[in-house]
Amino acid sequence: MSSKTVVEKVPKVISERAEQVSVEQMPKPVKASVYDNVTKQFNKAADLMKLDRNIRKILATTMNEIVVHFPVKMDDGRIEIFTGYRVQHNNAQGPFKGGLRFHPDVDIDEVRALATWMTWKAAITQIPFGGAKGGIQFDPSEYSRTELERITRRFTFALGDTIGPEYDIPAPDVNTNPQIMAWILDTYISLRPPTRRQNDLHVVTGKPVEAGGSLGRDKATGQGVVYMIEEWAKDHKFDLKGATYIVQGFGNVGSWAARLMQLLGSKLIAVEDATGAIYSVRGLDAKHLAAHVRQKGGVAGYKIAEPIDHETFMRTKADIFIPAALENQITVETAPWLMVKLVAEGANGPTDPDGDEILQSRGIDLIPDILCNSGGVIVSYFEWLQNKRSESWELEEVDQKLHKKIISAYRRVRDTARDHQTDWRTAAYIVALCRLERVYKERGIFP
Ligand code: NAD
Image 1 (cartoon, rainbow, N blue to C red):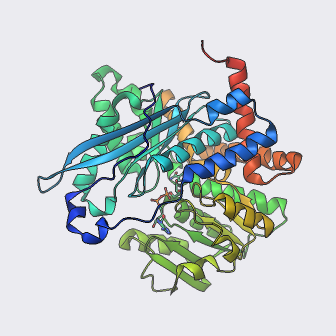
Image 2 (cartoon, protein in one colour):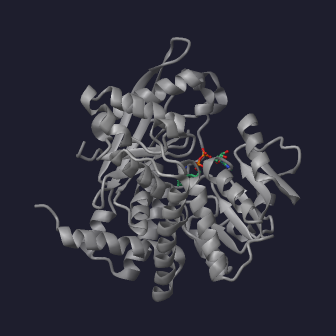
Image 3 (cartoon, rainbow, N blue to C red):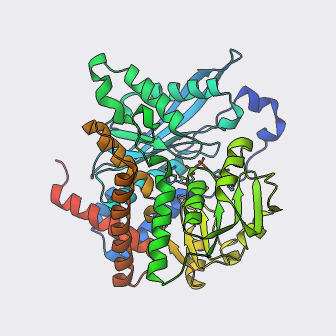
């Protein structure tokens, strides 16, 4: 699809299950616009670097916005209608690339923001991808495994040729994982002519290793976050051995970052996820906690820690905070609570523009999402390359290449912040926008 569908109001999915529960029918509080945050961040950087005004118009707009409503048969024979999205922000640097999120809060505003951030990430890390993101607006925990498989496969079918190995390549995000990627792959290639099937394995990344995934992709985002923290520590002559850290979100990104920080000798003292928050002054064993989360579905009920509330979690005194859950967590209300030296953004968009200003005024360092969590898309690129070349790399090779790429991106952002006398988020945008400006100037605009 190359034309843009403008979507202003997207109807919520109304399931028969939801209709039976009266509390779900109550109007939800209005969600802050995440795309407004992207626009503010973009304008600040574009003004400072004096981005060409024509290229500014192009980058301020998404290219394609696909919304699909599709039916799925439930285990008891009922049909439910789901709403799925794929937003393709820009492909000037290469095929569209970005994750798929399964969450009740997924809407066009959120997906637009996430797609745009993907373009900046690829530009900062200098990988030949554009930016996209997608998802389905529903809570996967309310569905059986077989329903989840049918929802995933039917969504893939509904997207049709709007995704493709050389055009738009999805990956995991919140509530999606290697299994979901394997179902997408299988559905996509089953619809191709038999002679094409083995050539199209790179239609998704983040696959299980046996299905063509890369070693090291599972931990890649968390690993990237930890490489960023190590580099920051080196710059600040800060010893990570014995340093304390807290983590919000204990899924793929949060739990890997937590486990890898522990290997450096740092001490995890508080964790929050969708089920609650916990604290231990003596330190939590991240590996043991990850096993508990796998078994019980969340950190709540972890016996070797004290349960705490959200505000107490955010006020925990520690050296480093790794937000690795959802957007808009560090805001005008919560930024004053933080008692840390560094925020390393594993999540996309955890800090809103007001939160940013407060952190800066309080002298708290921040490694911005579009740099800090780019390890995922970097190793997705490695997986895509391995599939195209029918290769499989050793874990050491993946880690080494990831380290090299993400550290050079870190240095570009750090040096830009110094040269422009600006904050790191704006610097990261400037690095991305300079590269995209060059691409457009060299290629020109058709016709
Ligand atoms: P995940 O589904 O594996 O984990 C999400 C975690 O967030 C879970 O622990 C969940 O309980 C927690 N959470 C949800 N709502 C919460 C709330 N209201 N308060 C506290 N915790 C809450 O997802 P993930 O893949 O780890 O992604 C986490 C973040 O990292 C997202 O912002 C995602 O876009 C970003 N990210 C992920 C990748 C990746 O490779 N998976 C790459 C780059 C960025």
